[in-house]
Image 1 (cartoon, helix red, strand yellow):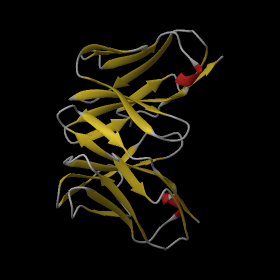
Image 2 (cartoon, one colour):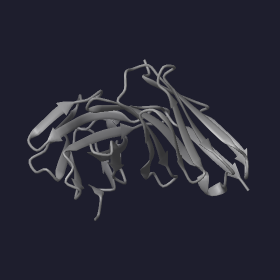
Image 3 (cartoon, chains in turn red, orange):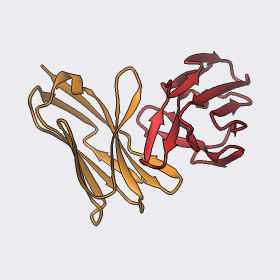
Length: 112
Length: 107
């Protein structure tokens, strides 16, 4: 099992560019999450999904879109990147039976 | 507003010391989680608690639901315990996270 993987690991964008972050899990989990982690702040929820084809907004959804076309994949899109979106992005999947989240290794994004 | 507060923010200990990290929360929860984030950035789940106490090796986690408070204890601390420890609470479909406690254990 690879667990939760994220692509890419690092990315530098210019303001206004777009990109998609890919999260994949091979544990057949229904729930998946996208978080951002900024210095001095806890992880903050951007969007989440409770199953294939469903998504919902979290605490800080503005400037991001997501899609969950397949159960194993959760995509996070930035349509027009802004410097305020410079952050480390973590994806997680959730096993309800043990109430445990499994985190990906993170993507470090810099927007210039 | 912070749904989850941790203390201390930073902690330096000598190897072998007993360490306590505290977490208070202000929302109704289904469970409380303790996570560990190593310098490389990876995050792993240490404990999930809904009541009482759990022990895993040198780590002990307790929760007091009435007081909305949890503690993470590390006995006989070791330099490899150096990491950021994060408290998180689950409420329905969402999770809220504390800002973390950065622990450094000096040999």
